[in-house]
Image (cartoon, rainbow, N blue to C red; front, side, top):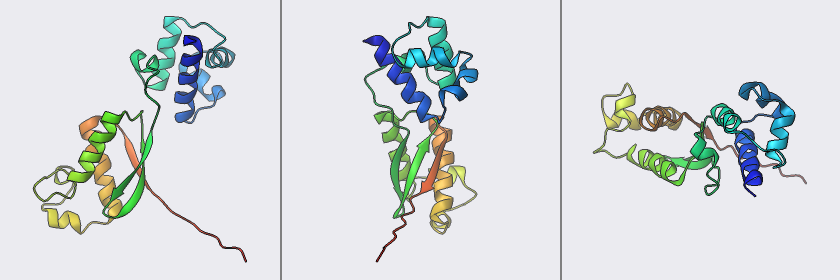
Length: 164
């Protein structure tokens, strides 16, 4: 049971980072067939190899063996009426997601200088004159500064095609 859970977790983390098993093998210093066996729950894993995998996935051993939290690296954030997909460099626990949402909410609070700290603006009024994309960039800087998580904001572009 634990081998299957660990294998599933490693597969999810690897895929969330965009790696194939072939690409991931040299990063963690393990053979692709070994990784495939671990991910399928058919191979035993040593502590040393678990540590190699955790390092390559940029997670702690505790995170690697935590099977209670689903893996989320993206969520939708609304900035000044525009929706963006926020992509993070690591898993977003509910606590981290909440902290990011607080930072985003405070971005437009006149009594809070959240974004002024990371911008070239002197006043909140100057901030409000920035484009929503510039504000998203400032939010990314602030999140990275406060939470040590690299994030990017991607606009949600909806394209609709109507065929007659």
